[in-house]
Amino acid sequence: MAKIQARNVDDALFARIEQSAMKNERSMEGEIRLALAATYPPPEQIARRLSLRESWLKETGQRFLTLLEKLQADNYFQEYSRDNRTGVPELVRAARLLQVSPGLLMDISEGRQELSVALAETIAVRFDASADWLLTGCGRPFPVRSLGDNYHDFFLPQEDMTGWRFDLMRICGGRHDATLLCLRQSPDGHFSLGAVSAEFVLGDGMGGTGRGKLQDFLIFIKTSCSSLRLDAYEFEDGEGLESGWDAAGQHHPVWFQRLIRRSPSRWLIDMLRGESPAWMTDFGYELKEIAAIPFPGTVPDKGETV
Image 1 (cartoon, rainbow, N blue to C red):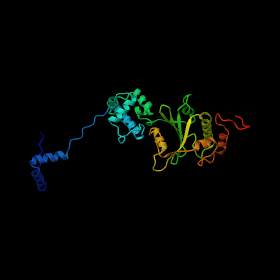
Image 2 (spheres, rainbow, N blue to C red; image 1 turned 90 degrees about the horizontal axis):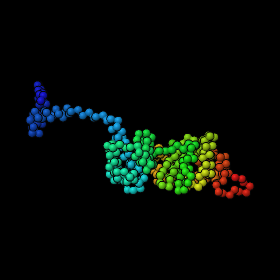
Image 3 (spheres, rainbow, N blue to C red; image 1 turned 60 degrees about the horizontal axis):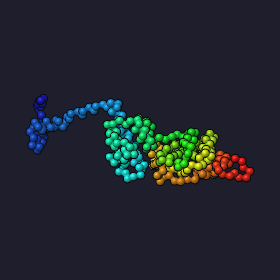
Image 4 (tube, one colour; image 1 turned 135 degrees about the vertical axis):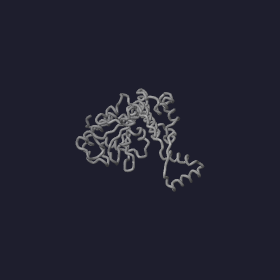
């Protein structure tokens, strides 16, 4: 053991050390040894650098837990939630839905077991989530489809559309005012979210191209989707509120169905009939052309040709 000797110690300092040693019933040597140990603690052990595999296991496990927490917060399970915590009950419930071992999900969540590509795809299908986000962290937890001009497949994904439901939501206020969000629910309870932001908006200020694309969209809805269940809503955005656009992809699509900020609206049926909503004043010519197109199955007026 190394030894330390000190000469010419200040009398006042020596007295304080002596007083502390007596108070703690220690020798002077013991008091000095403890004081030095407290003043010069050993350096923290250098953490071992994780390998790429270890880092990936840890990150995918955390993303899986985050996904379950988001599902609970969005009331996806429609059951009692323990402050959105993810513990044994939540992992067991998820395992039952996924038909896998609860222990496997526990090991994955703690970074001890690999989240396979096949299981990530199963999770994505079951919970309407993104397998790519689970595996890589890229994108958002829940996919949002950019509809653009390719909205036909979103509204008509198959020939028999019995039991499908569509909610068309216009964002009102905020940075993304007049943006259209489309929520699709299949008969088996799966959800998809689509958005139109660049091609047209539900409001004034578009050029001729934007108005033409909106007209094409409304004609498609009127002529090809008249047999579908289509409900229109307005989604309130504003200062201090979570933006509907920013929420898209960060929340499960069911989150949009259960918000007080979402209210039923007649804007869709009004526009299909050629009536202009209060927030759209420069679309009159296009609305007249839309109104002139009959709904499928209706009898044309006398003298009208179809």
